[in-house]
Amino acid sequence: MKKLKISFLTCQVISEREYKRFSLDFLENNHELIIFDFTQLLQPKAFQQQFNSRKRGLKTIFINNSNQLSNNVKYFQDSDLIISILGTITELNSSIFKFLKPYQQKVCLTYISSFPLYPLNLKYYFLKKIYSDFRREGIFFIKNKLKKCIYLLKKKLTSKINFKSGYLIVNGENLVEQYAKNEYQNTRIYKTCSYDYVLTKNIYENLFDYKYVVFLDEYIIHHTDLKILNMKFDKEDIYYRELNSFFDHIEKSFKLKVIIASHPRSNLEFNKSKFPGYKVFKGNTVQLVKYSEYVILHASTSINFAVIFSKPILFITTNRMKIYRFDNELLASWFNRKPLNISKKYNKDLII
Image: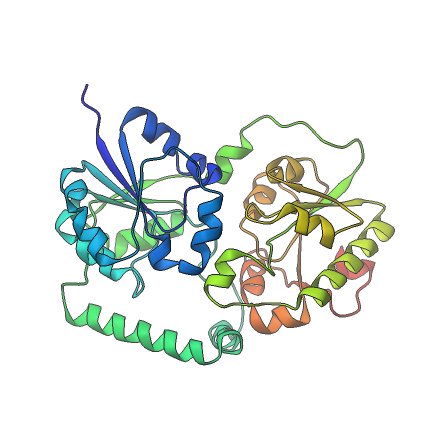
């Protein structure tokens, strides 16, 4: 049986984690797979760090300009299927999709984000979000919004930008319904589950013989995605001082140990140095959440594990994050909660 030729488009260098997360192991073993990596073009500040932790041995073409894309047009012409995880089509990547338009019927767009697109019952959300973004980005906020407005206007006035893919893979009932009603009416839509759900089906052992709570770290100070967007939500020294103080309060008040589940892209040694009084892990998040008493987080997408395992959730924020990062409130609203501000005085009653 002839193997399908599949082109896989990404804007994050494929590490071992992404290799499994996007089922590239299956595609590579059963088909002719080639990866087109646009990280250098779309996220240049993150490229080198991601490149250093790439999975070796993959057939990958790294694209950093439009000429390179044109020089490899034969791959797209010969492909049986083109899978894109470049995200939604925006002013940043529209030139790539414009190039792919002749092959749009064999393009499969993949939207598998599990983060809510809008809040639930959160008053003045739109105004608060604008204020938060402006305070965080300053002049870049105005420039970015202007670029987006120009792009949306062009999209409305010309058919050259419009892109109708043949296939769409998406998770979440609301997203499926939204896409089916709007721009993907004639697209074959396939529902999928979050990869987090797949991970929870594995068998895990409890690492501890005592009760504990787990903090889902987002590597909020040095996360590569935040560096790309010139975002900074908190001050390093104050942030870790307040976190450690809060965790100390948790341990003393509830007689529970606090365990740190590091973000997959974090530097483990850095995290260990910032949480000297606590056990810090990386790559064990599912396992740690499964056997925890409850979960503490800001706005981590790993909240999926807490939901699947039916764990109580405590949302936290800080004085700085209340100004610069409204996603904490957005995610908490879906659970009818407000994040606890650990920069202010708190007691046991506020935490429960």
